[in-house]
Amino acid sequence: MKKLALMTFLMVATITYAQEKLTQNTIQGVLKGNQEQVIALAEAFSEEQYAWRPTEGVNSVAEALLHVAGGNYYLASKMGFAPPEEVDMMNLSKITGKENIIAALKKSNEFVLDKITQVENDQFADEVDFGFAKMNKLGGLLAIMEHNGEHKGQLIAYARSNGVTPPWSK
Image 1 (spheres, rainbow, N blue to C red):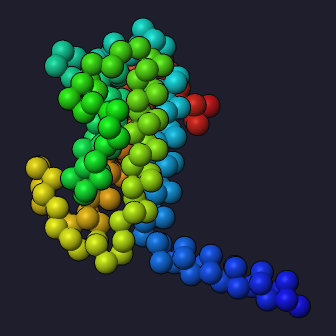
Image 2 (cartoon, helix red, strand yellow; image 1 turned 90 degrees about the horizontal axis):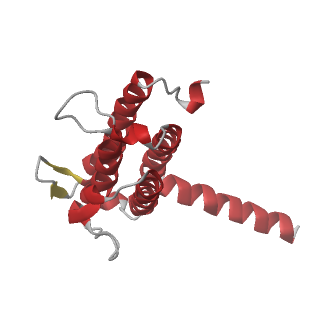
């Protein structure tokens, strides 16, 4: 009986905690799905295709991936989460090589996923100046999710233009 009571208590505590962070956990789940697909696309491109761009003046595959990584750090930093010390924001765009770019993107993904759940419910309405717009922290979390989704779409178009089938649609 004591074991059943303990199991029930732990289950209720877990459900209660999950409800307290419902918004953060939902955004985190959608974002993680987008991030996994962006990584899958990054891995599906050949090393040579990383230099491909649809036209002059538009980001290449490599530049688009590094832009996503930079966006993760930038948006989180505006909400009060400084990038890790070893991340040089001013030189992210100088990273070269497929493996290095994927590693940088994965690191930024892990960073931003962790930070989402550190935003408390009572902070959602706090105003943040992102430089391109003023919005609240909830809007900032949604912007992170949207930014990753937007560039997933861009990379799908890049992949299709290069004969690369998105791995999840094979």
